Image (tube, rainbow, N blue to C red):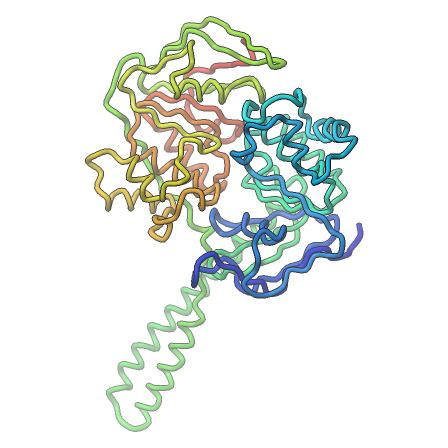
Length: 483
């Protein structure tokens, strides 16, 4: 491997709002051909760091040095909304200022690399979540850049897609920096971790596979907590002595002042334990008081080779029944859920009067122009007061400083946690969850799985995360692959 450093941050500081820094004097370097994970809590600034690397954002202070003639491409988490009406061919053409004569050949080459087969005249917005995930990666690859930035590349991918991506990345000979919450995926190829410490706003660099780095961070946190406990005991002891000696005269009073100064120094030595130790609070999703046939399914439609097939079925989903929809990427799972929510599904109907809690994988159920407060306020039922609403939101790490932010300004992970807070406030009779683990920090997933498992209303879910699915009770399976 070439050991040349091609990217270096030298004491870089950055903030969106005055006195609310994301980075303070952050320094790290990346060598050519390295495979690096970018790690940090939701909202810590991972996507912002990507934008600093690409030049979309400028640092407040410090230097970002990129080696001469180095090019950078980014595979984003989601397709931009303004690109959804493009054809696949038009979308790839957007990557070039001047249209290449061999663009068609390049398109087929990168689509083959990511195991994506579809006509190039297909509308991007008509693709499944898994197909869009592959398209985003292919769009970055077609630029043939020296540094590849991947933002949550496994979102919406089935296991076959994830396996193909892992194999590709292991063999890929260029520099890759990845943001992901999929621990198993990361551990397969990661050589090091750039860690954004949300409290200190510094960057820590670790060498090793993903799991060994997580263990090292955990040990460091435990060490910080032990040190803090010792310091706090010393502070209490010194304060008691200061109070005692202050009431004495002469040398005792001078000793009291010395002890007081030492106490201040000890208090300044206490370190903030990083936010990654904080997970969301355990939560419960209340249920609407409703009974009957909440969802009636008379037919299922699946898509193969871009042609629809319909099969008649007789399924009824009642209260306390949990259904999971399965099938390969592109078969129509998300389409089934979207059409059910919108009322456009001719083969499935929701009982009138049922309140539907919909978690959309692309957050299309959220109004990006609303503030966080407005979105939560819209979701809450009448008897839930503002104080309770704020408390519920805080349990999902949606704190007061975020309430005035537009939803469009949130990280994808924060949008996901906001969506769960809204579900609690809505008290739905039917939960429809489309890839609810996307963008969510893996530390939060056991808590979410427990709440979903214990939900006593009707539920339909799509998920490509087997470990998450295994923690939830399901009564029936709708396999679109058998249609």
